[in-house]
Image (cartoon, rainbow, N blue to C red; front, side):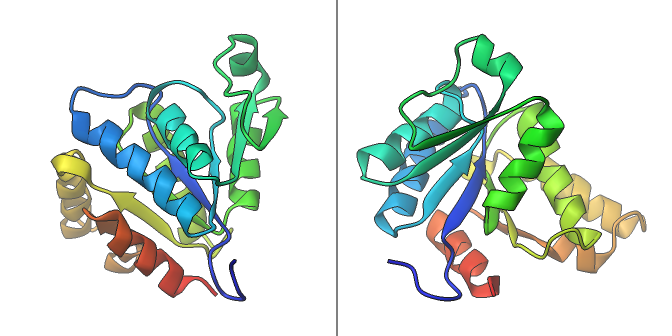
Length: 187
């Protein structure tokens, strides 16, 4: 059971594909399982496909609660994971992202494509602009985000990103360390 000041819900952004490396699927499973084992609910995009489906399935298999948030258009394409604990259906992607933000205490991005990057960058931007004060993390699995992290460092060097803003994105290669950092900043 969670006490005051502890994470109750973590939003996980990740791919609607599983990717090439087995490490991506393995980490997605361990993230869902670990959150459930620690009594932390998973908030995610509501799909049954890709890494997002793996995270949800693992959390449910470990006895956890999973809250999906999916836009009508994707629900109609039958990619929703109907066995989750709760499912919110939104009209638009923007409403989906806003609802996920409202429901969550912290945010973690796993490997994914442009949708994952969109969600990560928007929630990080919202944090930087003061629309929320919740921690944002990136799990760099098997070096997947090395190129992106290099770009972000270049953006700091070139003066397009302040070091303070860059530091708002917590980056780790180990989920246990990332989760501890996220919980350590949660008030």
